[in-house]
Length: 529
Image (tube, helix red, strand yellow):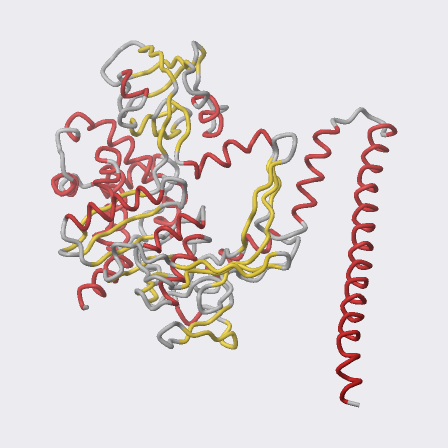
């Protein structure tokens, strides 16, 4: 009997495999037939519209709209990108674009140049911060029809092409004309790297792009040369970017073989990403700052540091974007960014927060819902899935449910919020006041070369009263409900923007971080160790 079982066992296994393959093929064929049937149905509908509809229709526009709606039925991060928008979408992370090399702000329907990129076409031609662009290619370029998008579309272009601009400059009673040749303009990933305290370096990373790895290595080298033995990595407001850029940054801090992240999907087998042990900061103490706008690659970074017990995560719960997109270029130059897998932290937590397929509006309102239920102000208001339990390498308990929960929670400060401060913050009036103040005092301010001296000067200028007066003139009347902290907030914001207008980020971040609660918590934490 045992011999018969042994004889028939291979046959049974073989038959089972064949049956399994046939069943699989049957379902695959059926799915393929259904897919082909639906595809033909879409073509049939478009043909009927094209040939029978009462009016002549732009079928390209109909198709673009149809594709957008089809992709919208998937998840909130899959998207269809028309060919006309693809270059701009890719440009954000490419680390460069071609333009004239200015930072600008639209105010009173006029383009104000805030900063001129060092070594760029505008600096070479003689444009200055404070100049106003009033004409482009011999045509007026002011008025209510001018938008940020229109400015970018007009000033950017192919490398080596010419654009003429007319400039109004303070103290000059005629329009100055400049001919600029568009050139490569770098897009920075690192805002600043500086020593924030003895032996503690600070690096602000605004995105994960093509140039992030080299920028980060340069920042690390600069800080270590300055004596940094501990680091603060600020990822607040960093919506993500390229995962490999985050992986390369993590290589600086993790030991060889440490799991960074893994991804897995219905058609994507599990893929592990591990540290290669080549980093120069494996023994440096670390704090990572995150908030509700830290997403994707930022969450991969924070999750890897947390799950490997490599450093403290400080701030507020991150966004919860853990879907892996693959970009597929179509024949007409458009593209699909389609989700192919989910990211999981080393402990097994899915970074992605829950979502309803086809309901992007509910997903986009999640941040507002979190705010309204008090999550930004109270740790107890955060809805963690306590049944979804995971453990770090060191055995600490962490929870799933989407996003990265910080080890040290830092709430938003509500004591400075009044009706007046909320209104002027939402309207951008403090920024506009700072721009106007800068224009009126630029000659004197340019003589100051460090943020500490500029801070002392500006603190003696009674900026609160001047800012409030500016806001009243621009339609905000109620300033009677301000408390002391509200006044301190207004002064701090105004000084920060003025310093940035003159000294750029090299002055802005050191000044602003003095009163930043997350930064102060990080410094305090690292100083204790």
